[in-house]
Length: 169
Image (cartoon, rainbow, N blue to C red):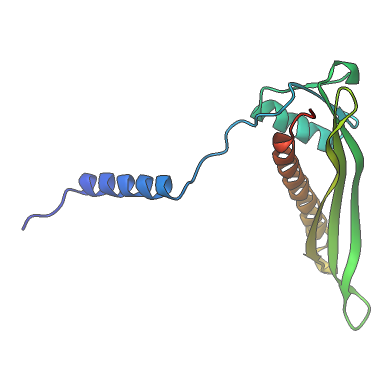
């Protein structure tokens, strides 16, 4: 019997997979190309959101984050960055069963002359968190993790919006 070579089979599967991926339009995220080269972020640089955003901009583009708004080509005004925790459901005995976590981020982008490149926009994310008093410490950790994930999602959405911004004519 003539059996196919296992390395030949692996090579054929790899080529077939590459062809399928190329045909479906799959493309890795590249660097973001912003309409500005120097950005001022209007929030305290030691905040977690500002640190994540600065890291994402430095790692994914040739844009530089500056500390002085006078040096910037564009200014990102943060109008709101808030978190909320509301009771979603309770048991028949009045004990909390679920919470809804919400993170809202409102911003606008202006050029150096003060003209709006992106008008006031809001990104709102929500997550539901089941709660059990017996596992309070684990649920606190889960809550913190959900907030971190929401913040990362907001930063990624913000990066896409900043990349889509066009200079004002």
